[in-house]
Image 1: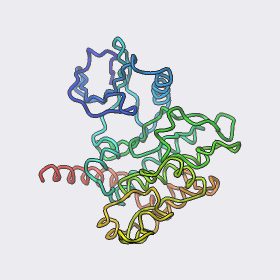
Image 2: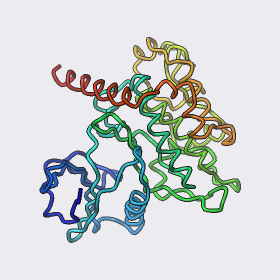
Image 3: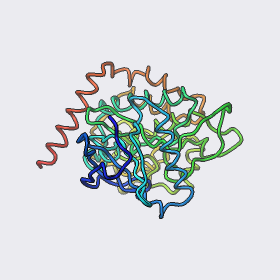
Length: 333
């Protein structure tokens, strides 16, 4: 399908949301010739700094260079005066962050997370095999297609290891990703970091998808950095990891050292749900302080938690019908 790089070839239907730290608008657009619906990111270059423009350029370049079913595909991009438009396929269910915010505030079901993580890991393995590091894995960068498959986006901060075994510099605009960043990336010491930093982010994102919020969401930045460097491992919140809330307790299940920064999840949900041992184990492995102790993306695809997703047809049908049924019925309430 040929999508022309010309604004006149598209009709803006509605606003889907924002991106780029709320400084760009995402429109639902329709390609006039084919009738296909697309997502169009709109950047006002007059308001963008040199660093912003570099990030936008990097995202376009990186997305064009990579082709994998579980990475966001590039369609086209074009300028209209000072307005830059970047066109992507429409993702039917938006990002996982959108789903958590609007429909699953207490977290996604574990089975759904297994399907999503498998797709993300397939895309991440492809990236790592290319000698690249993503550096910005989080729920808002995991998009769910209309058929239920997940695609990894947020490729603007991706970089190459080249012939180096480790990197030392932080990505541009890294302040937006501190909660998901690995201890070794935040330390910025002589050892640097490598692709295992992405694996740490997988562990943090798993907690985000399961708990409904990212670990350290309400923790002061300096304390968060200290706790990460000390080796604190965030975890899934369920009846096996949290104590019932007690206003008079000096050390309850939400403010202990083990759960610092985990936010205040709905007590009823935490105390009545229980995640599997395999899921807890996957998060613990990913969030190890020592990068060499973390598994690779390929290792995680062979983990008991992700191996439960064996058939792509089941992936498509389960996710599609689950989201469709839940969201459709919620709107009726």
